[in-house]
Image 1 (cartoon, rainbow, N blue to C red):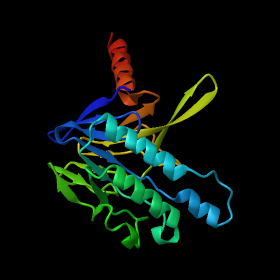
Image 2 (image 1 turned 90 degrees about the horizontal axis):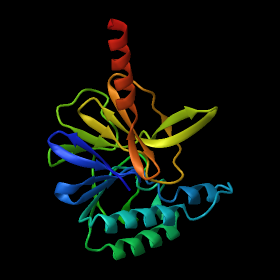
Image 3 (image 1 turned 120 degrees about the horizontal axis):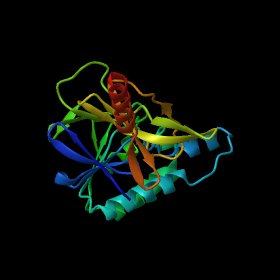
Image 4 (image 1 turned 180 degrees about the horizontal axis):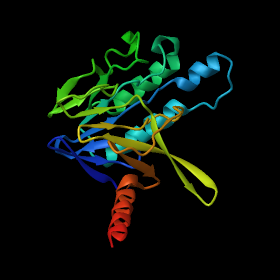
Length: 232
């Protein structure tokens, strides 16, 4: 797996192909929008969806914790999809998973889906969004106005579409908003996605297999070459 290095504020972050951010200076892993238990919500409503989404997401998270020797995990909101009290299996899965990572400090920012969290109160350190860590504001919702503090957020579930040969490929993506913020892709499996197009004030980094691709760097370089050719 080949991460992509990105500087936000005065911090160097590694964008991982799995859709997470690793903060080497603090041995911290950040993910957004797990939406654990979402499949169970659909099944209880009579919609036939495959089981195992929670187990798969937690297994992927465990792999990253071990691979990067993570000491702290930060969840950037919507860690669960609905009231955990309605899903005893979800609570049991999370309790067992948390015990396997007892030495890892875990903080969870409260997102719009995170509600009635009493059954999970002892598993994570729950925080409201906007708390600052190492000069970075930790949020669930990207700010809707300019802010002074660099930030990390989720909520959008950003994806990009690549076109070629008549085919279309959808990939999860990190979105850099100017130089001030970064929106993480959804880490959960049943999350859908918001297509993000190219724009002057943003940069898109696609999670493509075992690497993260800076989609807009090449387009910017191509545009600059075109301008040089026009001047000649």
